[in-house]
Image (cartoon, protein in one colour):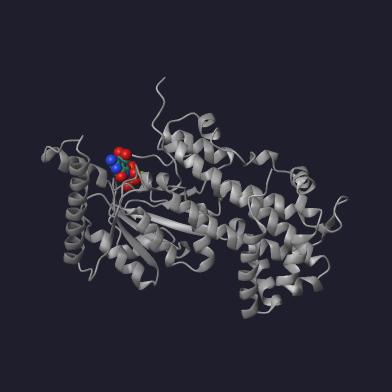
Length: 410
Ligand SMILES: Nc1nc2c(ncn2[C@@H]2O[C@H](COP(=O)(O)OP(=O)(O)O)[C@@H](O)[C@H]2O)c(=O)[nH]1
Ligand SMILES: [Mg+2]
């Protein structure tokens, strides 16, 4: 198989890395890489979803995990809340990312302060306050308390799909008329946006921002904007974890995941220089094959190409998992990604006969040459992972397109 990346793209990457290294010493960059290279497994992120009973909290948690409501392990929806205990739901691929389905505000007559104490306020990274109609004093009191405690929160208005439907019915919109359908959607969103703004303003919020969503399609309305907003307000590391853990909704989410994964690969390649190098009989140098295997598996998960993610997606879109898998051309299933698999790529790759890539790396980043095997370890790890990533991105795009195709008639 031809490599998915060329020497030219590699040069571009190396030039960027070189520029980054000019700002800091290699030791500093290396220490930082050590700390951050395992971020998908050791950075925790706890997102709290709160709001009144029936607002759509549990449904939103399921949507954030890319799941339907009827799946095993999904949050129960449409049920009356009886407990005051936050329910924990982990991201299906990286369990250090958690979505907390909080008890309904206002159900037990707690003050906002008491409520926050009950739910163990301090552990959450940020809050999402959901309402399906009007926001109430309970919501704004909670927001006020969260703000006092210097944490971020976002107002979300759920179920806008229902509002759009209702508007269309009341105006007898012709469903065949795409223009009318689009106009009526825009019109309804405008109305809700204004209503929510006035509603929160009347409750004392000075310049409220509300994000309109439907749990049935997070790629639509204002979920993408909400996602962008909360990502922006996280530190770099948590932002990348968020990007890599949220489900793939659009091509744009694939692009963002790719950039985050590239940042991670750079760190992994740097770390690979300073760990024990394993010599391989057919290569003139050693490198840490374990890092490569693990990262390739992580790439599969991030791009929804592992078995679990594919099953979840198949269930969500109501298609057989085999149909989605048929769109994957390059990426092997995670169980196939082993040391042997990586060695086979190396054996087959003509580039490794001549050590061009290693020379190239040392050309750009000579400091690696001073570490025993550093240049070759970096080059091998970097090159293998970038190549794997390029292919995974192509496959993820194909799976996304396949999932969106109209269902086949039986
Ligand atoms: N159409 C539509 N229904 C929703 C949406 N979000 C939640 N629901 C429905 O609203 C009801 C209450 O949702 P649930 O998530 O259980 O609310 P919770 O009490 O806040 O956890 C359920 O029947 C959901 O299916 C949405 O965005 N669109
Ligand atoms: Mg619930």
